[in-house]
Image 1: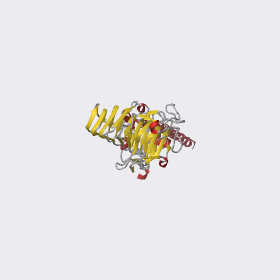
Image 2: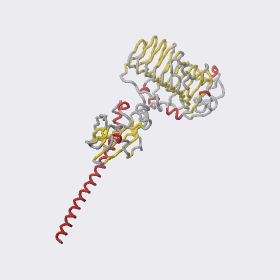
Image 3: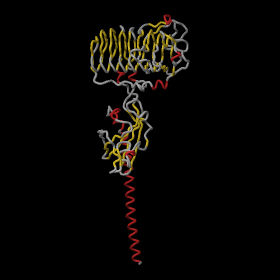
Image 4: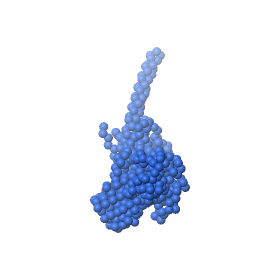
Length: 455
């Protein structure tokens, strides 16, 4: 009995040693799997900006919340992009995107995420030109002069249309008299996103109700007025950046015989060919209060029919354009003996087209149209280029590659059940089906991305 008991004791001790060794091995392996999964999750998330930068059509090829699967150091990993604003990549050029890097090694699943936003200091390529239109430039008995280049993502056509300067076009060039070089563009230039370019200015601007405006030619107007960060003759409410926002309610307003030091934003402006459009008429002296900001932004169409490049005299207008409290270049007074040069300095942007009709509008900066640019009525327009806006793009006009936001890295949970996640039914998986053979989710489609790493 003593020998038998001793033998059993030795056996138990030996078995316990074996079990302990196995447990220790599992602990070490589990620890190694956990660490390796973490390394892979970090590396996967770090690849997110590169994958977007190398995939120019990612907004249409990828879907918010759907996994992108690829191999990394022999392991299958998943990358999930989620638009945190509206869950739609096709809208909102500046929407923040959270990227999730997800890796599984053994039974260890690790998730590392980071918030990505576009580099707003990188200027859009449209800012390299004096004027640019997306849907073409057409004209009739008009002249357009520039010191830089006029461009379009479509064609240029015109009868008795003269362009004094260089041009860039994408399709056709027909019937235009050109005194400059002719360049056929290979690619469409980047333009602001019309669905989001107004956001900053609306969020930081001061509203001017439509019914508070004066009247000119039977329509609401900014007329014989001084609108600056220190002067708002309509509501008295001031904006330190000179951003003033008017909701046109589907109609049109005039800007006439006024001085504006600020950014004027016209929302819901008329854009139908059959309706009258908002217009700049008479004479104006206009520049943004913040030097690199736009001067005029129109959600709709704008007609530029003002007399530019000429002396704008207070005595003729009967309006003091530099009253006490609103100095012009440091000068303020109570008299009517000052003169100004009529014109717009800054970016003029319209989401639904611009028309230069009659007169001699003068712009120094950039004229940008998300639709067609039309010249007619014998207009003699001048659009001279300024590189100020390219060197320092204003909000809404800069969009470089997406990049990580400092301070947004975090260990996270997978936003949905991916292809290696255990499942019971298809409802457990964010994409595809539940593979009953493996008991894991299987995606219905995997986006193929060639990822090369330098170790």
